[in-house]
Image 1: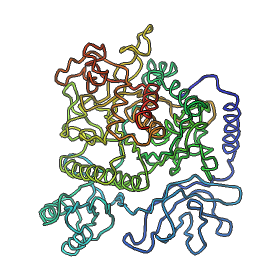
Image 2 (image 1 turned 30 degrees about the vertical axis):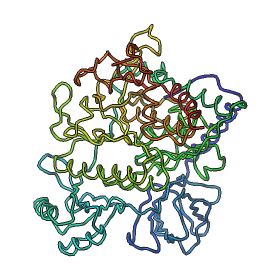
Image 3 (image 1 turned 30 degrees about the horizontal axis):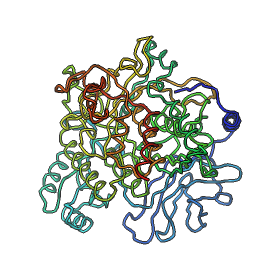
Image 4 (image 1 turned 90 degrees about the vertical axis):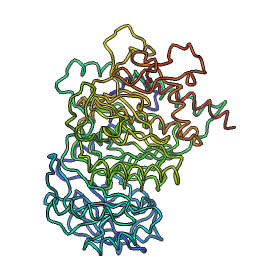
Length: 600
């Protein structure tokens, strides 16, 4: 989303410097820029002394000039092995902690990626290791994951299973007692027979079948064929959530001399593949990002295209302002912010299992807010019109395994990390977000999961931003009472050339980081807030959208859980009661500041 407004003098100077920096990088055409394209665990996953990481790069590497840094530490030559564009890095567990990794070679610096030493990792199947199942979906042939009962020794049980079935342990999510096995099978008939046998073993809670392959761009719609709505984007979709008002409030209120607020740094985990650091939106994040303690930092693998899903989602958090393309909410808070960390990671391309592995690592690395702009529907799920949903679907067998894995994840969060909140997209199937036979993970009912639907600007010209009809539900957005709040679903993607216009993308994927970025800002003001308190503040501050629901059973007008009297100071006759909730970023920050008085 391109934001245009008058900026303070200091901000203009900063933005012009960013523009110059980005232009300089875009002029480099004779050689590939130094970039980290991928990083993944390799070698012995179960070594207690050290961990090995394989790093693929672009740009010509020189073993004499290359320097690799993890956090503030410079890696020794003996810790690095060169194999063409692939680097093998071996780190001792007692010497290194999780942190940013980047490359330096002469004047060149790479993007930073987040290197986690926490050890959860699963591998993806290659093209020869997948097949189509009876539902016509791509599924892994010989890779499965096994969830071990919580009272059992997970690794020992997995080793016993591997020995009994002539399998091999190739991945693990130890905090969830989940281990990935490579089975000695050649086709799906043999796989399913072994899955049935393994599933009945003592100590086995569930078996996860991974269905993952080439997919449509996850949870998004590109508006090439909807010019009428594309025009409305330039009027400011984010105005419906008071985006600029929230940025202005944070910049003025946090450093106020009379009542200075001390902020806390917050880590945000974004489960996405990569970000294009050749885009002006992200070009100034290369090298050591933490050169300014107040500055937001972005850690991600490098993408091929600026309009990628990951770049667009990450841009809503972190994109540089006024370069064209996106304008990141947390980036707008830099001068008053505590130094937010936005970590983009998906572990590997092993589908939902990899998403959870990445999430576990990130939480153990201190992430307070997880952005899940993803979700899946069960085969046979219907939309609100009774028609089949044909995108992001999985078989019933796969869904049952995923449901068990997600249940283990949220039970672990509740037990070990009760302060972490997951922000999840409601989905774009025009379906029901709260029924587990239709949708995961948004159907889970837990205080640590907040579900976000999507809206777009209405055509009502004289509506005020606070009016319920200022915005309307996007036709594709999933609905029902499990949805906590709606936010603007449409945004411009990042671009390669400064001041050019990015493609228009819409989907609940892009509503979700608006909420997640706001929640991170709220926690930076009051880090003692618990997930349920965050939900309460978001709902109390929310504007309305849609028709009055009157607490009737779910139908097409129930966009979110209806606003309750307790969310309006117990005023039974308040006009908002029974309506659906629309994000108000400014008021949510204001209520967060007010919550500090109760803490003190």
